[in-house]
Length: 245
Image 1 (cartoon, rainbow, N blue to C red):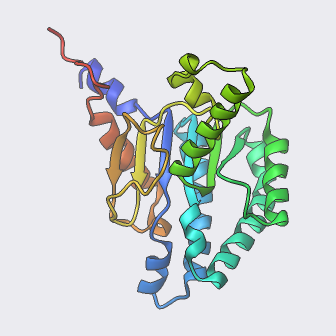
Image 2 (image 1 turned 180 degrees about the vertical axis):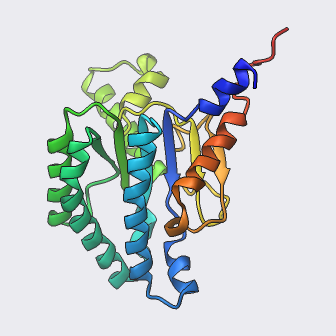
Image 3 (image 1 turned 90 degrees about the horizontal axis):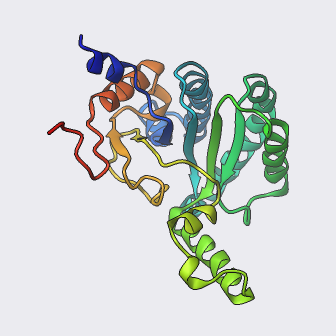
């Protein structure tokens, strides 16, 4: 193996975005209620976090765990998910801190219950000084909402006279998004769907896309390794040309 191939084999994305999909279908295929699919999915998500950030060296892991549109689902399913988040965030906060992971949340806080907000804020505060990787839960998230909220914030600054319209550039827009995230290098979606579904549209401008038919509860460490291997084989030109002339 030559030097370039060796480097590619070792290359992992700095920012990995993961669309967590297929929990309900996984449960349905086994004759189980959707709630058990969501529980299995969250249990697996915990292991993927440990592996991707803790062992493979991913610096930022953004996970699409609940979209703004998911509130249109059956009320009982939504309530179960909200309680699942509350219980798991509280239980996992200590481990995240011990591993040195900094926890972030991207999404609107409006519409989330006080118990969930309390659990989220506890994780944020407990891990705020950690520097061994960032774990970003995208909850009540939608990219259209993120961009809308950011543009509104910019408009308020212009209205207040603290920002000139001509000073609004890409950096200004990025600074007004939910979190100061680096560009996404690799976006992975499980369950066989090949859509972006309103996820991190600004941040994935030059991301590599990887779609797998595996339902998320079955998306193992080996599955993630396959995604990383495919990522390492890609020639990321970023609009330019990596070929030597």
